[in-house]
Amino acid sequence: MSHASPSLPEELVTALRKAQHIVVLTGAGISAESGIPTFRNAQVGLWAQYSPEDLATPGAFERDPRLVWKWYGWRRSLVEQASPNAGHLALAEIERRVPQLTLVTQNVDGLHQRAGSKHVLELHGNITRVKCSLEHVVIEQWEESGELPPRCPNCGGLLRPDVVWFGEALPERARDEAFSAALFCDLFLSIGTSGLVQPAASLPVVARKRGALVAIINPDEDAEWPADYCVVKGTAGEVLPALVSAAWE
Ligand code: OAD
Image (cartoon, rainbow, N blue to C red; front, side):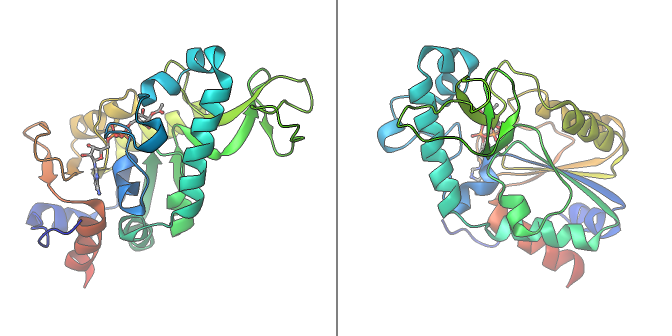
């Protein structure tokens, strides 16, 4: 994907340079340039016939646990092959340059941590971890008997990815920390998310109400954002490194 270099609002560059506490909310779009498909773009290959909303639910796992396990296995293999992109790296750089940065992600791919970000709150879990579907404890090792999904070595329950599915509660600590950070930040960056899934979608609303500048970084030409948000239409991999340069170089 190649675009002209994005034009950056002066208001955003200044806010970044002066920021005391930034909250960043990321979604699938920040990992698109690492080759991981977003949720609301068409799925590819084998999985094109399914919608993620039909696979990422407790009901889907009850109906067809093997299908759901295999879909996550496919997504996990994409994550393992992927590397952090310029957008992830720029966020780690911003964290090193400002007094406080809280990175809240809806992604389950762990690419922010691999890029060097330190303070990451995972709202939707992490695809590299597995937990027991009955006991909800993380399981590190299990026996591969050929059965899919494999079974919990403690109780025999089916294993599942340690991610949050539609209709499930978010991890409490991450959620509470994200909302209190949104209340007290002076700059809120929303990057690569369609902003359709709650409660994450409320975070920028909370920050804006408390007076923070809210900036959106998203290449979608058709998306509509509130009039008092500062919108930069461009990809994370282009806009974020350009912002770092504009603010500090
Ligand atoms: P979506 O797939 O809904 O949205 C991805 C957003 O990224 C879209 O607005 C795209 O325009 C934008 N985008 C695409 N390429 C981009 C790029 N290179 N740089 C910046 N933005 C780009 O993904 P999410 O908003 O993350 O939840 O979806 C939220 C949640 O819904 C996910 O965490 C997942 C999902 O179903 C669960 O599984 C619970």
